[in-house]
Length: 391
Image 1 (cartoon, helix red, strand yellow):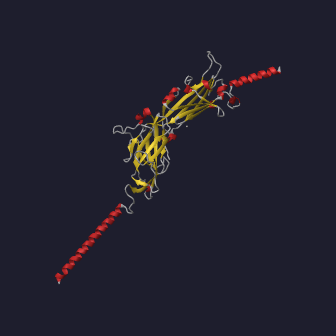
Image 2 (tube, rainbow, N blue to C red):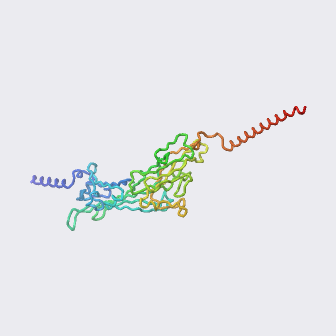
C-alpha cells in the first residue's frame, strides 16, 4: 500500500515539474500574476519590457502564448524568455520607429499639455506617448475556458522639449498589470563648438581667451535617436554662470528675434541644428582680463512630418513675438562648456594701455608742441636777420 502511495506521489511531482520549469519551482515569483510583474524601460531608441515568467506559468500559460497587442502570429511581436536571471523574465524589445511601433499594434501619439515649471512661458508643450499591452492567448479551442486571462499594459511618455546643458489592478477574470514610465531623449542630445563653418575643428579656449568678434560655430546634435524626430532650436542664450535660469542673460535668438551677429543656418530639418555668433564680452566683466560665459539652447524634438509647421515664420507678415508660445514639443536646455573671451579684437596682438579719448588728447598736445616749437624757431630766425639792419 505504501509503495502505491509513493508511486502516486512521484507521478504527481513529475506532472507538476513537466508543467512548471525547474527554475520556477524554487522562485519567489512562483505565484499568481501581480501588478508589479512588469518593468518598463523607456529608452531613447528602444522600449524594453521585462515580465516575470513564473507567474505566467502559474496561470497555465508560457512564453509562446504571450504577445504584444495579441499579435500572436507575428514573430517580432513575441517575447524572448531569459532564464539566466533570477527571477526569470520574458523580454520584449522594439525600436521607436514608425514601422516597428505599428507592426505590433502599439499606439503612438503626440499629446499637448500646458507648459509648467521651466516651460511655464509656453502655452503648449508636446509629449510623445507610446503605449500598448502584452496579452495571453488561450490554447484551448472550445467556446469556454477556465484559464484567467493575463493582460499587461505599458506606456512611455517622452517630453519632446529640453533645456540642454553640455558640458525615464486586478479585475475578475483578468489579471491586469499597468506600468507607466516617463522616458527622455535628453541623453541623446549634445552641443559642440567649432572654429570653422564645416564643423570639423573643435574650438579650444586659451587662458587668455579668444579674440572679440571671433566667429563661433555651434552644433546641437542628436545621436542614437529614432529617425522619427528632428532637432529644433527654440532659443539660445548666454549667461555668466552654468545655471540656465540665471538672472543675467543675453539672448542670441528666440524664434525670429536674433542678435545682429547671429546666423541660424540649419534648424528643424535634420537631427543636427547649426548656428553661429561672434564672441562678445559681458559688461559686468569690464575690469577683468577675460570675460567668461556659458551658452544654453532650449531644444525640442519635432516629429518629422510636423517640423515645418512648428518652425517660426520669420517673414515680415508672419513674424512672431519674442516669447509667443508656439506648439512646443517637450524640451530641454543644452549648455556649452566655459567660453573665454579676451579684450583683443581680431587682428590685434596687444591692447593699448590708453583709452581712445586719452590718445586723442596726447595727439593734440604733440601737434600743439610741434607748432609752438616751429613758431619759436621762426621768430628766433626772423629776429636774428633784422639785427644787422638796426645797427
